[in-house]
Length: 411
Image 1 (cartoon, rainbow, N blue to C red):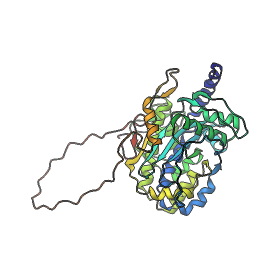
Image 2 (tube, one colour; image 1 turned 90 degrees about the vertical axis):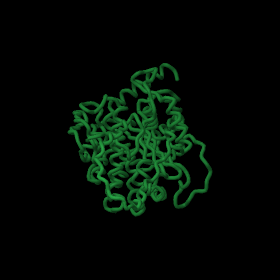
Image 3 (cartoon, one colour; image 1 turned 60 degrees about the vertical axis):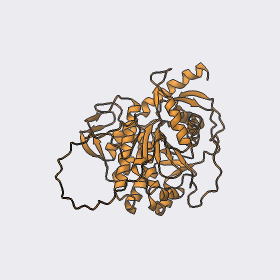
């Protein structure tokens, strides 16, 4: 990369990042939750045709650089049986139609939220790894649907999507360039991708009756339209949208995009818990309502069909919530630019573990909890003094990995 190219690349990305921060968040959240629900819902086959019709499909196969893949005879009931599945979740800053009503109209399309969703080959684990949009990474040469080829460069991660869109003019080019960038920098093979539009997110939240969350302190953000009092609150669709968009204001955090990633992860975890604790998975009406809202906002690759997901659904039906993990790829302030971040050496281990289908942090998956029957006894009962309450261990979302079974806030 020449110095002249670097000088052009970063200001453009910076301009995009300022207007992205309030508008692409929920797209990634919408599919993150939908993915966990779909993969755990045995009744999804009944509505597969309807949901497939909701999604826009594009073919990126000709533009994605090949990665080493095992040769295996596919299972007709589950094409991914016995294999790990990696799905790239992208949130695009599309500002037309109803999205313009939410965030204001603007031309073009940019990327904001990015997560890599990993489903283990034995279907015992689901991991969602967030990639900060300001990460400085190597962006490879990308080929567009119109035949144009871009130069390899080094810049902000989210500029890969912008490069594809600006030069190719379509979602196929933008998604393919982003997939190539992820594969180059992580060594992880991306099997599928989704680009999520957040316009239907509010309906999705409302379809499950809202999302209960612990709000430890008052949260106010005029820019995002967020006003929350401390305590246990049930967030409806518009409030959940505002919560995930908020970056600056009282009780929001340090104002950084990386801090906001933690709030997004907490929201996803809360939605997963709510969906798994209610009868959404077994009530056809609720299931159709929820998944219609989610899939109605998706653009995917040709292979990402609801029909292909049904095998995954069956095999993940008993997953332990402690094995649904959320984390941000380890990063530090970039040496070349304090306003950007770069991945640390710890990130190498996370990506290598994911590529090799072992737990991202090398931890042992949570085993199902079983309670033994009480032992027979004839001894008289002895009064027991109340024990002192045990402090609740909390995890700091965005900075520490946590599971859907962990506590991130205490009210």
